[in-house]
Amino acid sequence: MAGISNHYDSMTAIETIIDGLSISGLTGGTIIQEVANYQDGQITLPFISISPYGPEKIGDELNDRDGVYYGVLVAIIGKPSVTTLETRLSWRQQIRRVMKNRSFSGLGQNYNVDVEPGNVVEPRAWFDRSVFVSGMVIRCYFQEPRTT
Amino acid sequence: MLTRAIARGLMGIIPDKLTVVIALNADSASPTSVTIYGAWLKPVNVTLQVYGGVNLQGNETLVMIPDLELNPATNGREPRARDTIVAEGITYRVQSSRLRTVDTVWECLARKEIV
Image (cartoon, rainbow over all chains, first blue to last red):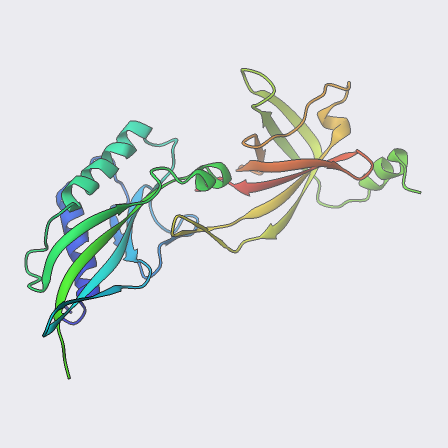
Protein backbone atom coordinates (compact mmCIF):
# COMPACT_ATOMS: atom_id res chain seq x y z
CA MET A 1 0.00 0.00 0.00
CA ALA A 2 1.62 3.22 -1.11
CA GLY A 3 1.99 6.14 1.28
CA ILE A 4 2.75 4.16 4.41
CA SER A 5 6.53 3.84 4.13
CA ASN A 6 8.78 6.19 2.23
CA HIS A 7 11.49 3.53 2.20
CA TYR A 8 9.22 0.95 0.60
CA ASP A 9 7.78 3.49 -1.83
CA SER A 10 11.36 4.35 -2.82
CA MET A 11 12.01 0.71 -3.66
CA THR A 12 8.89 0.41 -5.79
CA ALA A 13 9.77 3.69 -7.53
CA ILE A 14 13.27 2.36 -8.25
CA GLU A 15 11.79 -0.86 -9.58
CA THR A 16 9.45 1.06 -11.88
CA ILE A 17 12.30 3.21 -13.19
CA ILE A 18 14.56 0.20 -13.85
CA ASP A 19 11.70 -1.70 -15.49
CA GLY A 20 11.19 1.37 -17.68
CA LEU A 21 14.71 0.95 -19.03
CA SER A 22 13.58 -2.31 -20.69
CA ILE A 23 17.03 -3.76 -20.13
CA SER A 24 17.81 -6.27 -22.83
CA GLY A 25 18.78 -9.75 -21.64
CA LEU A 26 17.60 -9.31 -18.06
CA THR A 27 15.64 -12.55 -18.05
CA GLY A 28 14.82 -12.57 -14.34
CA GLY A 29 13.67 -8.93 -14.27
CA THR A 30 13.63 -6.88 -11.09
CA ILE A 31 12.64 -8.25 -7.71
CA ILE A 32 12.04 -6.41 -4.44
CA GLN A 33 13.51 -8.46 -1.60
CA GLU A 34 13.56 -8.01 2.15
CA VAL A 35 17.21 -9.07 2.17
CA ALA A 36 19.21 -9.33 -1.05
CA ASN A 37 19.65 -13.02 -1.60
CA TYR A 38 19.78 -15.79 -4.13
CA GLN A 39 19.40 -19.48 -3.47
CA ASP A 40 20.11 -21.93 -6.23
CA GLY A 41 17.40 -22.30 -8.81
CA GLN A 42 14.82 -20.15 -7.05
CA ILE A 43 14.99 -17.10 -9.30
CA THR A 44 15.73 -16.87 -12.99
CA LEU A 45 19.18 -15.43 -13.63
CA PRO A 46 20.18 -12.74 -14.38
CA PHE A 47 18.01 -10.53 -12.22
CA ILE A 48 18.19 -7.25 -10.30
CA SER A 49 17.62 -7.39 -6.58
CA ILE A 50 16.18 -4.30 -4.89
CA SER A 51 16.29 -4.32 -1.09
CA PRO A 52 16.63 -2.04 1.94
CA TYR A 53 20.27 -1.37 2.77
CA GLY A 54 21.80 -0.56 6.15
CA PRO A 55 20.37 1.96 8.56
CA GLU A 56 18.68 5.09 7.30
CA LYS A 57 20.56 8.31 7.94
CA ILE A 58 18.93 11.17 9.81
CA GLY A 59 19.72 14.85 9.25
CA ASP A 60 18.39 18.16 10.55
CA GLU A 61 16.91 20.09 7.68
CA LEU A 62 14.10 22.44 8.68
CA ASN A 63 12.40 23.46 11.92
CA ASP A 64 9.44 21.29 11.17
CA ARG A 65 11.03 18.61 9.03
CA ASP A 66 13.73 16.02 9.49
CA GLY A 67 15.95 14.84 6.71
CA VAL A 68 15.74 11.08 6.32
CA TYR A 69 17.99 9.39 3.79
CA TYR A 70 17.08 5.82 2.94
CA GLY A 71 19.48 3.33 1.41
CA VAL A 72 18.29 0.90 -1.22
CA LEU A 73 20.65 -1.76 -2.52
CA VAL A 74 20.35 -2.42 -6.23
CA ALA A 75 22.38 -5.47 -7.19
CA ILE A 76 22.76 -7.21 -10.52
CA ILE A 77 23.13 -10.96 -10.04
CA GLY A 78 23.90 -13.23 -12.97
CA LYS A 79 26.11 -15.89 -14.45
CA PRO A 80 29.15 -14.61 -16.36
CA SER A 81 28.72 -17.39 -18.90
CA VAL A 82 25.27 -16.21 -20.01
CA THR A 83 25.90 -12.57 -20.93
CA THR A 84 29.08 -10.71 -21.76
CA LEU A 85 30.84 -8.47 -19.28
CA GLU A 86 30.19 -5.58 -21.66
CA THR A 87 26.45 -6.23 -21.54
CA ARG A 88 26.37 -6.50 -17.76
CA LEU A 89 28.40 -3.32 -17.34
CA SER A 90 26.00 -1.54 -19.67
CA TRP A 91 23.13 -2.54 -17.35
CA ARG A 92 24.99 -1.02 -14.43
CA GLN A 93 25.72 2.14 -16.40
CA GLN A 94 22.08 2.56 -17.38
CA ILE A 95 20.91 2.17 -13.79
CA ARG A 96 23.51 4.57 -12.41
CA ARG A 97 22.68 7.23 -14.99
CA VAL A 98 18.95 7.03 -14.49
CA MET A 99 19.23 7.19 -10.70
CA LYS A 100 21.79 9.99 -10.26
CA ASN A 101 20.40 13.32 -9.02
CA ARG A 102 16.72 12.96 -9.61
CA SER A 103 13.57 12.72 -7.55
CA PHE A 104 10.70 10.30 -7.57
CA SER A 105 7.55 11.69 -9.10
CA GLY A 106 4.59 10.97 -6.89
CA LEU A 107 6.62 11.01 -3.68
CA GLY A 108 6.18 14.58 -2.47
CA GLN A 109 8.62 14.36 0.43
CA ASN A 110 11.44 13.10 -1.76
CA TYR A 111 13.72 15.80 -3.12
CA ASN A 112 16.80 13.96 -4.35
CA VAL A 113 18.18 10.56 -5.23
CA ASP A 114 21.88 9.82 -5.32
CA VAL A 115 24.06 6.86 -6.16
CA GLU A 116 26.71 5.37 -3.87
CA PRO A 117 28.57 2.86 -6.08
CA GLY A 118 29.64 -0.49 -4.67
CA ASN A 119 32.08 -2.87 -6.29
CA VAL A 120 31.53 -3.08 -10.02
CA VAL A 121 32.37 -6.78 -9.81
CA GLU A 122 32.36 -8.52 -6.43
CA PRO A 123 35.59 -10.52 -6.72
CA ARG A 124 34.82 -13.11 -4.04
CA ALA A 125 31.48 -13.96 -5.60
CA TRP A 126 33.22 -14.42 -8.95
CA PHE A 127 35.90 -16.68 -7.46
CA ASP A 128 33.66 -18.62 -5.11
CA ARG A 129 30.54 -19.25 -7.14
CA SER A 130 31.30 -18.04 -10.66
CA VAL A 131 28.62 -15.44 -10.26
CA PHE A 132 28.54 -11.79 -11.26
CA VAL A 133 27.39 -9.56 -8.42
CA SER A 134 27.44 -5.82 -9.04
CA GLY A 135 25.83 -3.50 -6.55
CA MET A 136 25.18 0.11 -5.78
CA VAL A 137 23.29 1.85 -3.02
CA ILE A 138 20.64 4.30 -4.12
CA ARG A 139 20.31 6.95 -1.43
CA CYS A 140 16.83 8.48 -1.35
CA TYR A 141 16.57 11.88 0.33
CA PHE A 142 13.35 12.80 2.07
CA GLN A 143 12.11 15.66 4.20
CA GLU A 144 9.63 14.18 6.62
CA PRO A 145 7.37 16.33 8.83
CA ARG A 146 8.10 16.13 12.53
CA THR A 147 5.33 14.72 14.66
CA THR A 148 5.02 15.60 18.33
CA MET B 1 52.37 -45.15 12.24
CA LEU B 2 50.32 -44.22 9.18
CA THR B 3 52.29 -44.82 6.03
CA ARG B 4 51.32 -44.03 2.44
CA ALA B 5 50.70 -47.69 1.80
CA ILE B 6 48.32 -47.92 4.76
CA ALA B 7 46.60 -44.66 3.78
CA ARG B 8 46.07 -45.92 0.23
CA GLY B 9 44.77 -49.20 1.59
CA LEU B 10 42.31 -47.38 3.85
CA MET B 11 40.89 -45.53 0.83
CA GLY B 12 39.43 -48.85 -0.25
CA ILE B 13 36.93 -48.87 2.59
CA ILE B 14 35.59 -45.36 1.96
CA PRO B 15 31.96 -45.71 0.80
CA ASP B 16 30.16 -43.78 -1.96
CA LYS B 17 33.11 -43.15 -4.23
CA LEU B 18 32.38 -41.07 -7.31
CA THR B 19 33.77 -40.56 -10.75
CA VAL B 20 34.66 -36.90 -11.19
CA VAL B 21 36.38 -34.92 -13.90
CA ILE B 22 38.80 -32.27 -12.78
CA ALA B 23 39.82 -29.53 -15.20
CA LEU B 24 43.17 -28.05 -14.26
CA ASN B 25 43.23 -24.55 -15.68
CA ALA B 26 46.33 -23.10 -14.15
CA ASP B 27 48.83 -25.74 -15.18
CA SER B 28 48.88 -24.87 -18.86
CA ALA B 29 47.42 -22.54 -21.45
CA SER B 30 44.67 -25.02 -22.18
CA PRO B 31 42.86 -26.91 -19.42
CA THR B 32 43.94 -30.45 -18.68
CA SER B 33 41.05 -32.74 -17.82
CA VAL B 34 41.66 -35.75 -15.66
CA THR B 35 39.04 -38.35 -14.81
CA ILE B 36 39.20 -39.59 -11.26
CA TYR B 37 37.30 -42.79 -10.50
CA GLY B 38 37.72 -42.90 -6.74
CA ALA B 39 36.88 -39.41 -5.50
CA TRP B 40 34.54 -38.62 -2.65
CA LEU B 41 32.69 -35.55 -1.46
CA LYS B 42 32.09 -34.09 1.97
CA PRO B 43 29.53 -31.25 2.11
CA VAL B 44 30.65 -28.96 4.89
CA ASN B 45 28.69 -25.73 4.81
CA VAL B 46 25.50 -24.54 3.16
CA THR B 47 25.07 -21.28 5.06
CA LEU B 48 24.63 -18.04 3.18
CA GLN B 49 27.72 -16.05 2.24
CA VAL B 50 27.54 -12.28 1.88
CA TYR B 51 29.04 -10.68 -1.21
CA GLY B 52 28.66 -6.90 -1.39
CA GLY B 53 25.41 -7.00 0.56
CA VAL B 54 24.01 -9.93 -1.42
CA ASN B 55 23.52 -13.26 0.33
CA LEU B 56 24.26 -16.32 -1.76
CA GLN B 57 23.92 -19.96 -0.85
CA GLY B 58 27.34 -21.15 0.34
CA ASN B 59 27.54 -24.76 -0.83
CA GLU B 60 31.00 -25.34 0.53
CA THR B 61 32.15 -28.86 -0.20
CA LEU B 62 35.34 -30.83 0.27
CA VAL B 63 36.23 -32.86 -2.78
CA MET B 64 38.79 -35.55 -2.03
CA ILE B 65 40.98 -36.60 -4.95
CA PRO B 66 43.46 -39.49 -4.58
CA ASP B 67 46.87 -38.26 -5.65
CA LEU B 68 47.64 -41.60 -7.23
CA GLU B 69 44.86 -41.00 -9.77
CA LEU B 70 45.70 -37.35 -10.36
CA ASN B 71 49.39 -38.02 -10.71
CA PRO B 72 49.78 -41.67 -11.76
CA ALA B 73 53.20 -41.00 -13.26
CA THR B 74 54.35 -38.26 -10.91
CA ASN B 75 52.85 -35.72 -13.33
CA GLY B 76 53.15 -32.82 -10.89
CA ARG B 77 49.50 -31.84 -11.22
CA GLU B 78 47.87 -29.93 -8.41
CA PRO B 79 44.36 -28.51 -8.10
CA ARG B 80 44.40 -24.73 -7.81
CA ALA B 81 41.87 -21.96 -7.29
CA ARG B 82 39.31 -21.64 -10.13
CA ASP B 83 39.91 -25.19 -11.36
CA THR B 84 36.62 -27.01 -11.89
CA ILE B 85 35.50 -30.40 -10.70
CA VAL B 86 32.39 -31.95 -12.24
CA ALA B 87 30.71 -34.57 -10.08
CA GLU B 88 27.29 -36.04 -10.84
CA GLY B 89 26.57 -33.23 -13.28
CA ILE B 90 27.36 -30.49 -10.79
CA THR B 91 30.27 -28.13 -11.37
CA TYR B 92 32.36 -27.15 -8.38
CA ARG B 93 34.92 -24.35 -8.33
CA VAL B 94 38.06 -25.04 -6.35
CA GLN B 95 38.86 -22.35 -3.77
CA SER B 96 41.96 -23.95 -2.30
CA SER B 97 43.54 -27.35 -2.00
CA ARG B 98 46.12 -29.15 0.07
CA LEU B 99 47.74 -32.54 -0.03
CA ARG B 100 46.79 -34.51 3.07
CA THR B 101 46.98 -37.90 4.73
CA VAL B 102 50.65 -38.64 4.17
CA ASP B 103 50.53 -36.96 0.77
CA THR B 104 47.95 -39.34 -0.64
CA VAL B 105 44.78 -37.26 -0.99
CA TRP B 106 44.13 -33.79 -2.38
CA GLU B 107 41.56 -32.11 -0.19
CA CYS B 108 39.95 -29.47 -2.40
CA LEU B 109 37.76 -26.86 -0.79
CA ALA B 110 35.20 -26.07 -3.49
CA ARG B 111 31.89 -24.34 -3.98
CA LYS B 112 29.14 -25.21 -6.39
CA GLU B 113 28.88 -22.98 -9.39
CA ILE B 114 25.73 -20.93 -9.22
CA VAL B 115 22.77 -22.48 -11.00
